[in-house]
Image (cartoon, rainbow, N blue to C red; front, side):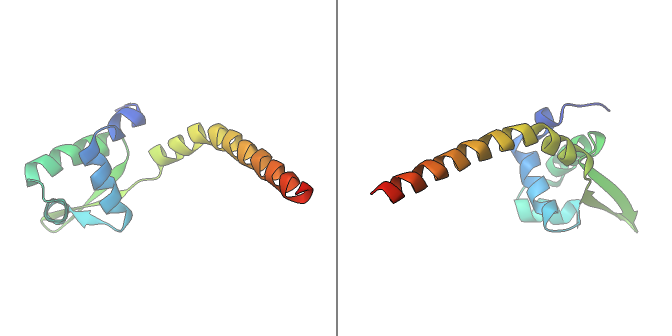
Length: 105
């Protein structure tokens, strides 16, 4: 399913789930407990995250184990890179300005 990654992560509960998975793989029940959300709610959000490529799912016995997938995060990184360069240029210019000001004082 081709879904805009920004739309997917616009939902706060999905971001919370992604934050939890950043620390390691987890089953639906574990996520529900950690996030204090009903299991059906977590499952619903995990389906959206899986369909959009943010997470993968592996079946282990009767559990589904979820883990982060790199694809959409790489897409974010590609989109953000020019903005980060711009920001760094502005910070570098500010640093040079402050250095010159310190030398003249």
